[in-house]
Each structure stands twice: as C-alpha cells, then as structure tokens.
Length: 193
Image (cartoon, rainbow, N blue to C red):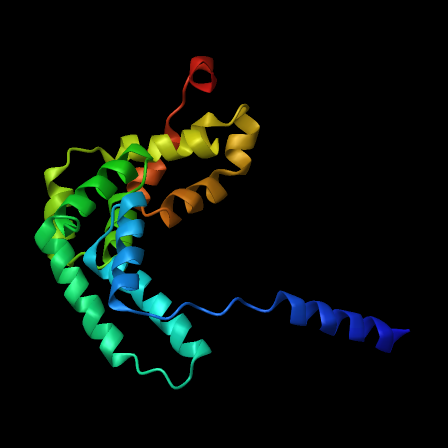
C-alpha cells in the first residue's frame, strides 16, 4: 500500500514539473523590463535584480548557458531605460517615501527599504529630510492601525500589554521616547470609531 502511494506521488510530481524557461534574448529581456515598468515604478537596481532573476532561472535550467552576454544586455537596457526616463531613482524614492509616510512607517523603516532597493544612503537621507513629518503622528497612525496602546478598549488591557505595544513600536523603527510618548497618551471613545 505504501509503495503504491509513493508511486502515485512520483507520477504526480513528474506531471507538475516546471515549464522550461524561454530562451533569453535581448528583445525578451527588453519586453520583460518594459512589462515590469508598466505595472510598477522601480529603481535601477531593483529592475536589474528582476531581470537577473530571469537570466538565472534560464541558466539553471540550461547549465551550458553563458550568462555574461545577458548581463551586458541588462546593463545596456538599464542605461536605455534611464535615458528614456522610464527609470529614475529619485522619482522612485520620492514616491516610496510618500507612500510609506502615508502608511505610518518610521523614517528608519523607510530608509532601510530604500537601501534594499538600491537607493544610495545619501539620497535617501536627503529626500527624507525634505519631507515634513512628525514621528509621533506616524507612531499614532501605526498604533491606531494595530489597535495597540491608547487604541485598546479598556485601561486594564492597556496596562497589561504596555511592554508588548512598546516593543511593536520600537521594532517598527520608532525611537523609544516617541513610543513611550504615544503609549502614554489617552484618547476618548471617538478615537475608536
């Protein structure tokens, strides 16, 4: 019985095998890049990672494939996309900063995300400094969204979960003093609606 089930599973795995990746050409990489940019705003480094992932997938399935030509194509395409204005790191960073601030994310969190996407630390600092935001206000947004701290219904729960709520805010990138200030505030019942 066991061996019969194992054979059935092996047959199923063979049916589900990955579809072979299409051959990587310069035109294909260009189309992949344009389709990605159609749907998402991107930084140069992020698009490079997206395209390299496709090249690496193809190279994995075809061990004899030489990736050096594809890497040169990617760099060429990225330069073209920048020249055409499809890619602009400053524009991307500004949009992301605006979105993250609207979501109540901390400056430390935003800077970390921008660094992950290939935005330089200096540019991230400069663009963050240009924005007007209040860390306490952002921490309050997060607290309201997560229903922690002053947004808990009863006082007993607020006291009981104070340390956990403090940890949530600090892990989200807010300073300890800002987190303490936010958790020390109280709101009337209108804030819960």
